[in-house]
Length: 145
Image (cartoon, rainbow, N blue to C red):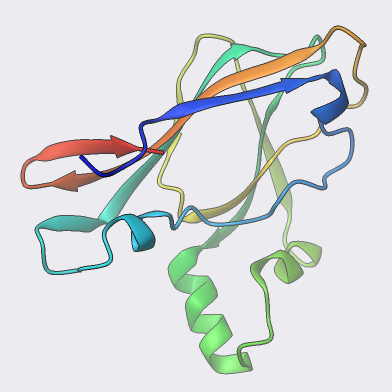
C-alpha cells in the first residue's frame, strides 16, 4: 500500500541508446519509499530486477562497474561531496551483462550500473522491460517501482 507497483519501460527505436549516455547510478529508491529505518525493513539486501519482454535486434543489457554503494560513500566521505559516482567510471573497467528476452536479471542495485547501449538501432526496434525493486519487510519481500 502506498507504493508504486513494478512497471514497464517501453522504448521505441528513437529512445534506445546507441552511446553510453544513460544515467550511471545506484538504486536507492528505498530511501524515499521507506525513510524510517526502524520499521522492520532489511536494508542490507535490496533487490532490483529487469525482465526483458522485447529487445532490439542487437540486444540489450546492463553496464556495471566494480563499485558498490558502501565503497563509493567511503570514498566520497574522504574526498568531499563534489565527487559523483559517474566520475569514477573513467578509472574503472566497465562490464556488460547482456539481457535475454524472458530471463529475469536480478542484482542488489548497490553495484554502480547503467542501461547498456547497442551499436545500432533499426527503425522497428523496441526495448520493453518490466522493472522493479524490493526490500525484505517483516518476513516477506515487498516489491515496488
